[in-house]
Length: 232
Image (cartoon, rainbow, N blue to C red; front, top):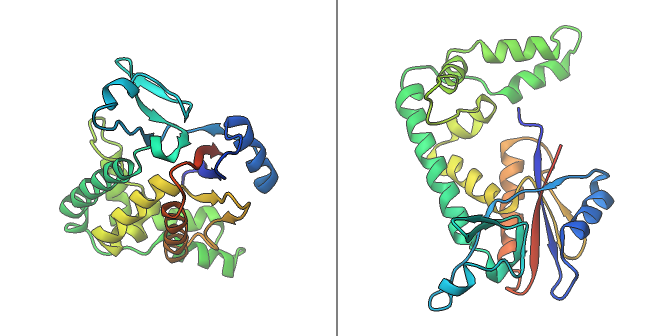
């Protein structure tokens, strides 16, 4: 299971939005530090795009490809290409899910999710340790198939068995989980100082968080800024 989370910090218009400010906000809310994540595609507008693509003005921790600015950890929303960021994540997730369906779902029985085994452990830790719960989860044929395909040296996709609940929920749910996460991460701190995050690790609560956070993001003004930060 991934231990790293991506937190999106948003800022009011006209505020001093930079990496240091984002770090202070995260430390205040989560008492931890992190590093910027270059997860957002950069917008290049028509006409002036051939000029602005060479400059990283109003971007945070931008990266270049052949001299052109392509991705950034954040910046002014008007300079970020959020639709492209979501589309890329959606396309990758859709392709991954379809390969999973073709090679794994059709050849193995439905499996119980990791959350089911965690619940057994919490109900009686002395009877079922966390290691035993994980062993039982991973010995299921469908989970073993996901691990085996991901371990192949030439594997085009990595199938995270701890996303089994999302895989089994269907293509639309799995893709939505990933494209929305690409935009708002695992938690979002609003410009008003509110921390938005799932109330539990369940898929349903994660989807509720993503809906709330993406709605907030879509309501932000183009002049506002944001920054993506990875924390452990």
